[in-house]
Structure formats: structure tokens, C-alpha cells
Length: 89
Image (cartoon, rainbow, N blue to C red):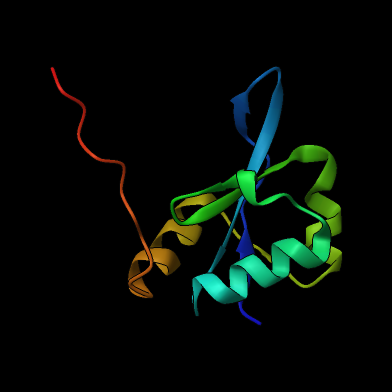
């Protein structure tokens, strides 16, 4: 498995969040999340949002901690980045 997690620095819904990605496949990412008990609704286009309380669980399960820029770079290099569609103005 090649999974990465960034620090829980992203605010939302009253708490901080991390992102978990794979640089191999979405299937690997979904399997990892399922093994952690993370619901599929936490999947957002190309990553899972993980609350800060679950950060250590993900690391203990094998996710490699990296900075947010490195996480994004690995996702892009793997060809797995799915950007948000542009907003209508």
C-alpha cells in the first residue's frame, strides 16, 4: 500500500481534518478507508476527509505522514487528481 495523509490543518464543521490519498489507485484508497471504518461518504473526488481524532489511527494502519503540498504532488504525479468543476459566476 502507498497511502499518504497530511496534517489535520483543514477546518470544517467545527473541527480539523486531514486528507488521505493513494498514489496507486482509488481501489486501494477505498480499501484502506474501509479497513479503518471510514464511511464512503467521506470520499471527496480523489481523497478521504479524516477528522483529526482519526489521524493517528490512519498512521498506525500504514498511511505515511507528509505535508499538504507533497500529498497533492503525489496525487497529481499518479494521475489521480480530480479537480472540482469550475463554479458558474
